[in-house]
Length: 210
Image 1: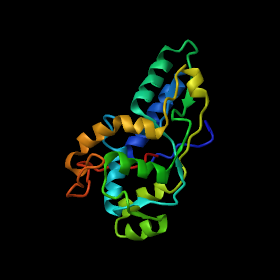
Image 2: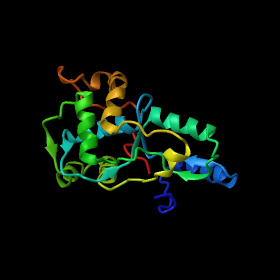
Image 3: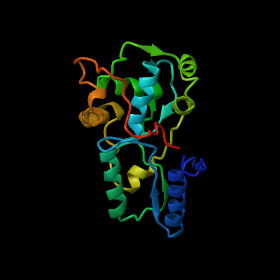
Image 4: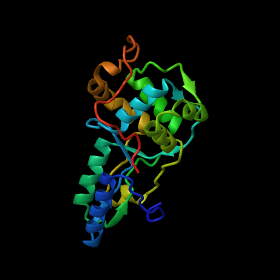
């Protein structure tokens, strides 16, 4: 809920973002704070998940940790709505789709929509941690996925006069072609031959942002 969770920036990017937010709030402005943003142009969130899946070589079962997400088009609409709103919103808004997504559903949707080769392979969280024991970076992101990161804020859609749009599965399906093109030979279209290599984004990914 808004104001109930204190920011805990853990990277230089998060620290500078938090500092910028304080300047905006001090000036009486509004801060729209998404959690995981997906869609065309995303080079970190979903590519980071794909990299993690490539290391696990399986999806996760029984992981019901919930995550807040928003697609880039809906986020853009919310930003425009906030800028043009006659209510002149102020303060912090957690701008995410109101329906959080369970970790297992998140990963299975990515696997299915991007045609990743692990649709029939799945492991539990404990087994996944064991498999990632020699990879501290991957283990860190796995642990973040296994914990709730759900930020509820019903005010935002009323105050910016904008609809949250379709849920994650439908929204992600619209952006899947962009991801397939961006990730190139590391993914395939559903129903086609499997890629010959494991997906590894060209940049160091951040699977989940704090």
